[in-house]
Length: 310
Image 1: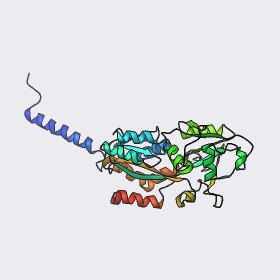
Image 2: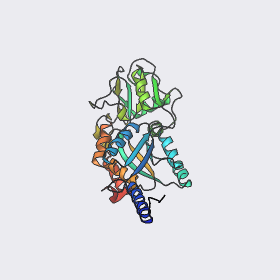
Image 3: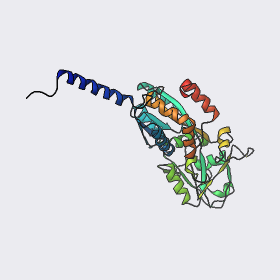
Image 4: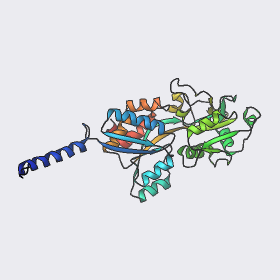
């Protein structure tokens, strides 16, 4: 039986297959395609998922998956080359950077938003403000009764994160300056801390501001009392619920939220971070309960990425 394929038709078919593979590889109009695996901070998992969804709506040739597990988990995965982007709610440590470089990974840092790290109590607790020293003493276990800081005569219940959490590390290093009391109940995520505090009349906890605010109203979640904080007794108290307090540093526990890459991002990674730092991306960050990149960190990003984000 005579073959249906002549030498010319086989050559033409081969050219069409190659052309098809080239088109698939090119992805969208700008040549961006592929899949991005984003992993890390539980504080950032909700905003990360919202950013991924919005980005994929505008760039259908790139898929983005976002999972939590803690900042430490994201950093470890990046060091091992198992993720494209690490969501991290604190700066990488010197030892982590050294470990990454020893593994051939060059951590590249970009700020994607701001968090007014909130300290909150049960809404039934009649307490408006605490100083940094008072918060530190509470979570170190040195102040154990609310009456010592102007509250009711009741034992303080404390809720916090596990040690692989970037929020745990940031709070320990920037608020406590020491280790947490062994009486702090260590929860798997901020949502569990919020739930615990809501159901414990004499509880106190800490977590990303996005978990304490009702998205629809912009007010505190029902059942929570977000504490005003002052640097010391002679300073003004400030709430993290006002964006300007986070932007200016009037709120003393403001922090940047990071994406880490292995080297300067390009391809789909660059396209993704360009979206996040754009006006559209920052609107997503705000809707998720966090705050836009402050002028200080906008300048930092500009130094990192230069003309790539203009």
